[in-house]
Structures are given as structure tokens and as C-alpha cells.
Length: 94
Image: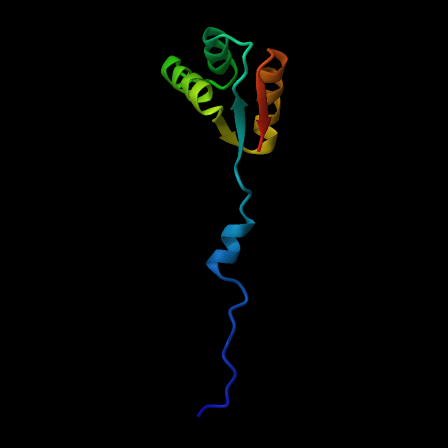
């Protein structure tokens, strides 16, 4: 039997991966106020969605209650989320 102590790696790939900043996302919530057209036009204007993407998100929000509409860093998403809030959409960053 060896009396050597096992070597412990100081850094592993897993540790390095946890240092990478986690992506955030804007979550859009359903409401009883805004029309589909308003939601779709807002997503195209502020989230750079295509018409098809915006329509799909609008239907997901309508039937599921919420949908992640944009991902990125917090700094990137904050002004976009503020614009969505300014046009009376219900959104927040997670």
C-alpha cells in the first residue's frame, strides 16, 4: 500500500466553466390588455425578432402565460426590457 497522498487538481475544466457569466433572459408575461399586433410589433422593434419569431412568442405567451423572448448579458438586456415596459408589456429579466 502506498502512503502517497492523492494529488488534487487545483483547477478543473468544470471550475473554469462556472466562471463564465451566466446568460440572462427577458421573460414576457401574458396580460389581458395588449393585442397580439402590439406584442408582435414590439418584439420586432425591440428584440429584433422576425415576424415569424414574434408571432410564435406571442402565441406561447398567450397559451403558456410567459415566454423567454431574448437572451444575453444583463447589460445587453436591460435597455431592451425597459423599452418593452415603456410600451406597457409585462416583462422582466431573469
